[in-house]
Amino acid sequence: MNFSLIFANFANWIEINFILSLFLFFIFIFFYSLFSFPGLLIFFIFSGYIFGIIWSYLICLFSFTLGCFCFFIISKYILSKLFKKYYEKYISKINDFLKNSTLQYLIIFRMIPGTPLMVQNILLSLLEISYFRFILSTSIGSSPIMLFSILIGYKLNNISSLNNISSKDIFTWDLYLILFALICIVLSTVFFKKKNIN
Image (cartoon, rainbow, N blue to C red):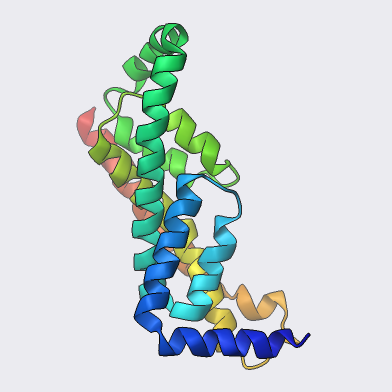
């Protein structure tokens, strides 16, 4: 089976049906995030390879945030009903601790690599946070690693031959510089706002 030919035909179909492919990819990422399946970074990289930086970032950001938000609403309702006793006893203490700087901690929490998406969404659904803060913290906190993955896919697409590719061709200094700048911007915004609150 010639996988390169299959992939070339697939890429050609996406190019011809670009708007439809964006919509289908949006739906796919939405449901993938809704069920909090692992491996989202692979699809972020794939989107950068196929759709480029701007379209990939917009589609991934909105669909990912919307999927997590729907999970948040469903999980919040179910957990509060099933574990009402423990929910009221322990979660109230966490909420008291976070009440003055919820957004800052949520953004940092979303930026922590390696934490499974389902664990993140379940833990966040236990907190008394507004829908707006959940959406804002999810979109801001997930942006650095999402954009980093998309940039990797974009770089892969711009490498002429994938046969002799090495990590040095992908993880170049400019990629790390962009990621570092994004994290610095997010963290400086978080801590600056926290300082103003205090």
